[in-house]
Length: 417
Ligand code: EPZ
Image (cartoon, rainbow, N blue to C red; front, side, top):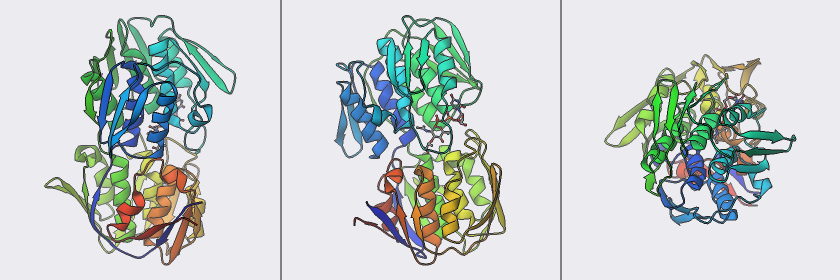
């Protein structure tokens, strides 16, 4: 099985082009089931979750594939509501978006529960609550979920009990084609949610964000359009943590700077500078980093998807750093791997204190997408050689992370033995 090998201690210097945002690409791909015309999507990342999502659409009879490096063409005109590859669906959280898109287009869906990174329970009761508000009936048997909706209720208000990216996205997709207005309250406002709204509005939808609510005025149909998705803010910020652990200075291309702006102060508190200049984002690390404390919360607060990577970087900071995880309290599996490298920390409930640690190379196992990225961050700054197994987790969400880091001086390569 392929491994990533890293010889730590090389500082970084050069330019990295950031890819399109995985968590935008996935809902937009499934939302194309609402549009029976050709859509062309630019800035699409070549990551396994995108390839798998396209495969699910193809299994339904749609045309869905890359037509050049980062452009995808999708036409779901001939897509049928058939049984999907349940194994594929159970691997990805994004397959949850099949529920809304099939409910809207076909009036029914029958599938296994969506999968997703294994850091604790991934419930979908908020999604079900929303679908029922729209008039859908739902039966679950622990393995399969079946939803049906003959005619979407009009002028409905859905109040989500907790801020959920997936449930917000599913309610938007389920509401935009039909009669009447749907108001969704207590919504997630991550850039990837706004990306989906922008795409659907360009295709003819009528979706507006008002404070913490989204108003969807149903339309009869949507038209196929060309659209460029946002760049991946978590990928960009992951590279910022790499500069923190390995030191040096890199320039990032293709970054939507306004999306990372709210998170930059957390890095600046450690001494890292992140500045936008002439279309590039320059990330520079001081020789000595200072620890800081963060807690994760819905955007624009510190993103949970940056927690493991930032935690790995804190090992290289002077002082006691602290991360409080308020969204996925089980998201700490990466700590066992950092411990193999000599990391010093104390976990107290959903909080971890990270102490200055002298890390050494080790054989490590990625346990999920962002935990895998955290191992790369720690290995880049460690003394000696590390090998990272279960690379399949990392390639789900990071396009070409090995060549991108190698191009800025990291001693990182694949071992295909
Ligand atoms: C999306 O997952 C992302 N995945 C996750 O990114 C990200 O960590 C998460 O949003 C939070 O930003 C994709 O976009 C494919 P949620 P999602 O619904 O939609 C609870 C990555 O690394 N909840 O916002 O599943 C839930 O347990 C991945 O790219 C319920 O209790 O997250 C969590 O505590 C990992 N009931 C909180 O809400 C529900 O019905 C937020 O989850 C739904 C959610």
